[in-house]
Image (cartoon, rainbow, N blue to C red; front, side, top):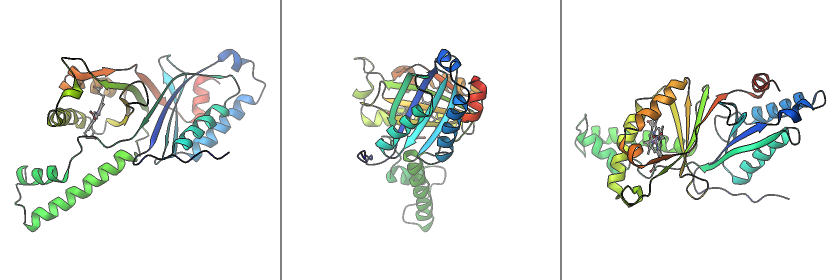
Amino acid sequence: MALPSIKLSQGIHVLHLFFQVDRARWAALLPGVSTAARDRLDALAKKHSGPAAPRLCSYANVGGKADIAFMIYAPELQQLSALQRDVELAFPVGALRLVYSYLSVTELPEYVTTDDDLKRMIQHGERKLQPGTPEFDAAFAQAKTRNDEYKHYRLNPELEDWEIMCFYGMSKKRDLTDNWYMLDFDARKKLMASHAKTGRKFAGRISQLITGSTGLDEYEWGVTLIAHQLDAVKEIIYEMRFDEVSARYGEFGPFYINLRLQPVDLWEHLRL
Ligand code: 76R
């Protein structure tokens, strides 16, 4: 049976999976079964090693909420689902228990920089160029190329493959007094600009992927932070709490901290 091909109008599907290993089941495996599972997973990971989708990344969860985590990126929904099954079937029957999963999709921010925004920045920003001049046109063309590239990667991420992946769900509050969805567009855009400014301070230390999940999963967004060090994760989340967007409107799910390990290292680390 061929599964129907399901694509988004733009962007790709993302799935975070968190599993616990049944240690008792594992201890009872016949010789060679664990290694065969590792090799199946290794082949699957190598076939989908990225940076572009379809991509499969494996992690060890740190802290005890799970043992193993996976992040799957796929342009088509059935491809995402098939990859999930391939991962599960790579393991011995009954050896994995799903403890958390999160389905989301890449999206363009609602507050995306428009051509008018770019023109305004060129005219009134540091450079103060006059519209209609060749300098203005050249600056605009350059800014537009950069903006288009940014939008492309926002929809088709090629995320860094650094040592740490932090994942959590996030929603914006809908209380009667603090309701993000009752603010007008300009107020939201202004608040998000301040948020982005805080974010950019972490360039080189944090790489982020914000995926939309309204109607798809428990929260409105999935937040994936990639880092070299754990304190960078703690610092950015701490600092963002002072931004009005998070301080006033942010609601957060449980935090999952994960260590990027290829299957062979994952097996060694978990003593599987
Ligand atoms: O996309 C961009 O890089 C442009 C600006 C930007 C948007 C639109 C941006 C920048 N974010 C955007 C949207 Mn973000 N982000 C989070 C969290 O823990 C918390 O308090 C919040 C979790 C972090 C850590 C983070 C980091 N961001 C969003 C949205 C969608 C909101 C909506 O549409 O209403 C959410 C939920 C969200 C949450 N953000 C950045 C960062 C960082 C590091 C940046 C700078 C990225 C860069 O310039 O490279």
